[in-house]
Image (cartoon, rainbow, N blue to C red; front, top):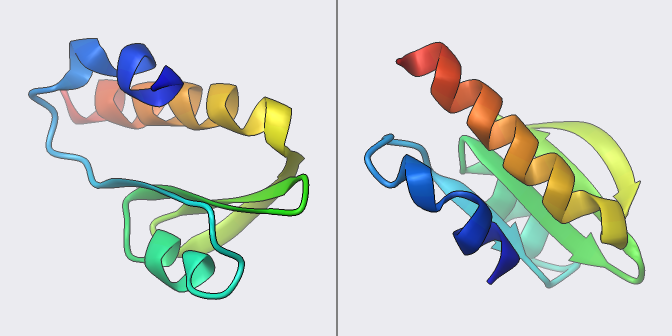
Length: 77
């Protein structure tokens, strides 16, 4: 819900964003998105175009994803 709310003004930008809560299949699915998060056991891996770029505490992950999506969307406009 926080991500949907944080990105509601970017509905027209063609980006694929994934948030996966499974440590088994999450990384693979998050890699297929333009920007993705794979969460497990208090940590989150941030993926950018399939590449893991950062490991964060989960409480910081949503804000990081939102800011990264906004940055990528801004560069596309």
